[in-house]
Length: 209
Length: 365
Image (cartoon, rainbow over all chains, first blue to last red; front, side):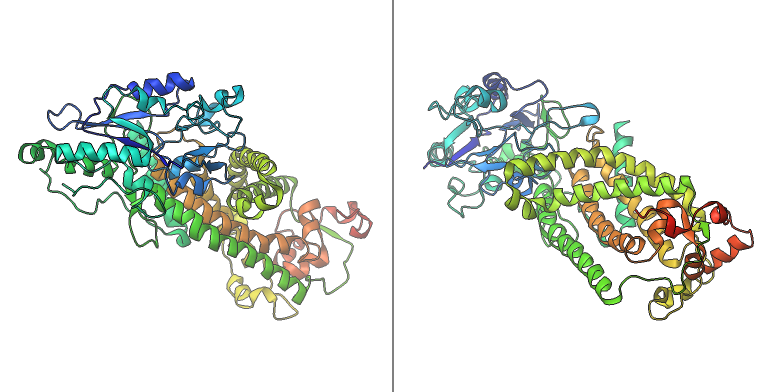
């Protein structure tokens, strides 16, 4: 069984925000909620500007899952971290715990009262029946069930954002690193997937530059 | 304005940490392991080693905000800054440090404390039993609490119980209730508990302020308090050391719980309840830890007070329920106050003495 992962190649990302838009469009994400965002480091500095697209990394040892007071998270066979909005109480603990700031809360009332948490599903929907109306309304489209990969990565114009079987995308990235000779660091890989223990693939090989 | 706000929040949270000695934790600020030289920027690195992005990756790990077109608090932060809570050995991502602290010591030792406190009270009851009056009740009643004082007490007490129970469900329910009642019912219950917690919380804050204002003048230390404490509240002997309107134990409970813990819980609670004041995750993580530790301490201590005020002391509950206590009760438990009432020095007096029926004739609640 494939272990689904995201990987963003900072050498390729051009900060077009196409992934952000693709995600919002595909899942009809409510106003004020962004499941994905692009962050630019050294913005405007020639030769030093790098952009990274970030959303839920579907961690191997997911902190959100560990702190949820109602245990509403679950992991699919593909290693995708999903949650059940029927159980979610909107406490915000997953948002405290997540290193990447992935969990989003639509405001459900005055004074910042939180609604049900919303986050990237790796285009894998939720606990409802695959491709059902209820699933789409709560979690967005279930592209994995349709045999497709996440919309953000599919839409990426420079193929900076890769999403799919960790072994496959690691091979693609490894080849890029070999050709470039530099830059084996992968955004969030170590934090989200650990250091190669517990069955998760290690960061793509290559000496640290 | 925003800087002022976050400054005030920071001040409030440090005040809280200082107020709660058991939670005297420190969440160290971001400190990447290897500090690069100040001029080691990506632009310079690029010139000498093209393709080496080490300065950029350091920036990613630093937890500093960078540019993003998605507006919102901390959206420019890629990975939370590093932090560690009091007692933790290593720096980790702040969220991870918080997770380990909350799921670790707060849940484990907090749960242990609540269970042990309840067990200790139960054991004490079995060992000593309730404190009964030594003489039969006189049948004459003395006004001990006015209607306002009782209202202040009960609005605080009832909201405390709601907050305590809902808090326990949110911290321990996953381990205790969830395996028994299942996901659907437990999530429904916890949702209810969260909403009760959020809406009763501010009510508790108001009631605590009211209560403190009304009761503070009776709770300053006075002569005899030390002797009362040294005699352990008369536990060892038949006769209590005479005390005023409130004995040293009650005064301690007032200052420690109502004033100190009440303030700590209110401030940390408000920080988490209103996430729309630009406070960052680190602030809310710290608030959550202090709130959790303060909460279990509060609950554990409340067991003693609830016990003493109900089944632990004959006649005490009736005093707060109806406002009147028997003269014999007043003489035995608060002799100095009783003398003051008799001589007309203290308010209240035995106004109800003749007008009220004897306690035996009153319906028991």
